[in-house]
Image (cartoon, rainbow, N blue to C red; front, side):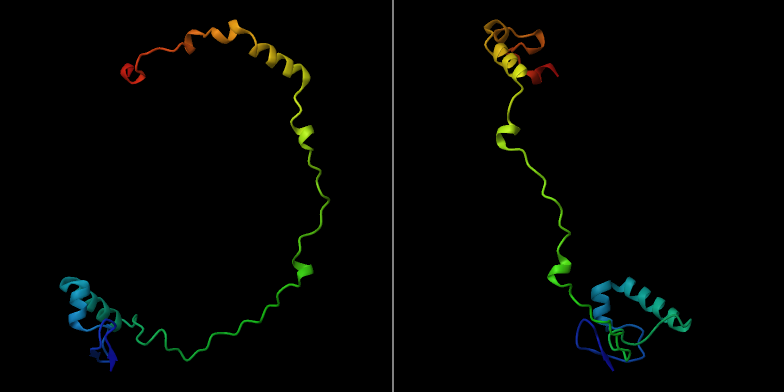
Length: 130
C-alpha cells in the first residue's frame, strides 16, 4: 500500500493516482477529480502511464569527474600596461579663448536682462491653456 500525498490514508498500489478520494475532491473539485481519474485510467490502458516512484530509483547518478580549482596564478587576469590618467589640473583647464567669452557674456547687464519672447515669464497658469 502507498500513502496519499496529502494525508496518511493508505491507497492500493494499483491505483492510478497518489491521493485518496476525499483529498482529490477537496484539492481538485469533484468534476476535475473525475476527469483526472478517467484520463489516468485511459493512459494506463494504453500503456502510456509509468507507475512507480520517480524518487526511488535503483540507478545511481553517474559520477562526475572532480574538477580542480585553478591556482591563484592561473586565475589572475593578464597584466596590461597601466593607462595614464590626466591630472586634475589638466582635466579642468578651460580653453583661454572660451573662458574670456564666457566672462564677457556674463558681465553684460543688457544681455542678461533681456529675454526673448519664448522666455518671457507670465503669471498665467500653464495648465489652463490646455
